Image 1 (cartoon, rainbow, N blue to C red):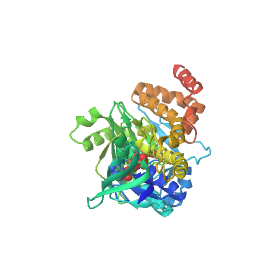
Image 2: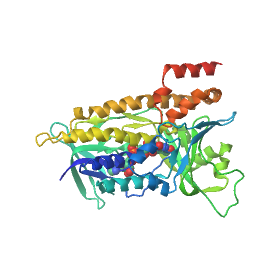
Image 3: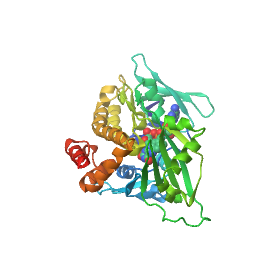
Image 4: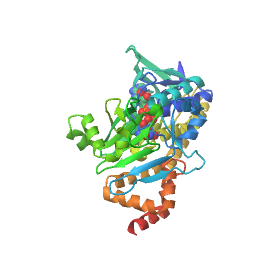
Length: 414
Ligand SMILES: Cc1cc2nc3c(=O)[nH]c(=O)nc-3n(C[C@H](O)[C@H](O)[C@H](O)COP(=O)(O)OP(=O)(O)OC[C@H]3O[C@@H](n4cnc5c(N)ncnc54)[C@H](O)[C@@H]3O)c2cc1C
C-alpha cells in the first residue's frame, strides 16, 4: 500500500497536519514511537495565537472539558524592579492562551486526527527514509512495537518528529546554534491537606529572569503548576544532577515562593536540550518538515506549539494541491510543487526568529534586561505591540521594524 502521506510524529504539528489532510480526503498514516497519552517536556502555555488554530481543528471543546486554564497575561519578574505585566491585547484572536498539560493536549489532537480518518500507528519508531534512484523520498522505515522492521511507502513523507526528527536528520537539513541551552522541568501539585499559602494562587504565567537564565511558571489543569528553568551547559555540569541545579535555580528566585510554598514537586526533573535550531529549508522532493523539525526557538518567546500548529496550517493546503497534481507516471510530490509552503513559512517566521534572537541577547544581560523592562513600563504603545507579537495575534514585524526599534532605543537612552 502506498499512502498519500506518511506523517512521522504525532505532536501538535504532525497530528494537526494529519487532521487537515485527512479531512481533505487524502489517505494519511500518522506514526509515532509513543503511545498516547504521553508526556512531553514543555512549559505548557500556548500563546493566544494558537487558540483559533485549535478552534479550526474542532478541539477547543475537549480542551476546555479537560480543565485547561485560560491565561491573559505574562508577568516578567527581574531583580531590583517591580514586575512588568504584559496583558494580551484583543485582536482577531482571543486575548488569552490555553495552559494545559501536553499529556492531555497531544492526546486530544491525535484523537482528532483519528476521527478525521487518519490511520494512527503508535509505538512505531521511524529510523530512516527510503529514496528512489533520483533521490526523491518515497517512504520511511522503522520498527514496530514487537521490534519487527516496518516500511511505509508514501507520495509525501512529512517530518514532524520534533527536534530530533528522523526525516530532517536523514536529509541533513538542520543547523543548531553554537550556544547550548538546557531546560529543567517539573510539575508541582497543591496538596489539599496543606494550609493555603500566604498569597493567592497565581493566575497568569510568569517569567523570572536571572543572571544566566530564567524560570517560567504556568498553572495547568487540576491545580498543577509547571515550573521550568533554562540554564547553560556550564550550569548543568556544575552540579551532580539536574535535580540539584533545578532546586538551586528555583531557590535563588524568592518571587517563586507563591508557586511552590503550598505545593510539592510531583515528578523528577526532566532535562531537555532547548538550543535553537533551524532547517536550511523545509521541503525536499517527496518530503516536507513541520514544527520543531524545521524551527525551534528559545522557549522564552518560542510559542513552539503555535509555530507547530501554524506550520501545519500553512503546509496542508499546499500538500493537498501537490498531491492532487500527482499522476500514475509522476506519483511523487516534487519540491517545486511545495514551494508555496516554503515561501509562506519563511515570510511568516523570519521576523519571529529575529525577535526571539534579540530577546535572548537582552535576556542574558541582566542590566540591559532591567533597562528594557523600565522602557516598556514607561511606554504603553511599545508594551502593547510586544504583547501582541509575542502572543502571536499580530505579525512579529510589528516589533521588528525600524519605527519600533528606534522608539525603544530612544526610551533606553532617556
Ligand atoms: C522544555 C521546553 C519548554 C517549552 N515550553 C513551551 C511553551 O511553554 N509553550 C510552547 O508553545 N512551546 C513550548 N516549547 C516548544 C514546544 O514543546 C514545541 O515547539 C512543540 O512540541 C513542537 O511540536 P512538534 O509537533 O513539532 O514536535 P513534538 O511535540 O516534539 O512532537 C514530536 C513527536 O514525534 C515523535 N517522534 C520523534 N521521533 C520519532 C521517531 N523516530 N519515530 C516516530 N516518532 C517519533 C515523538 O514521540 C513526538 O510525539 C517548549 C519546549 C521545551 C523543550
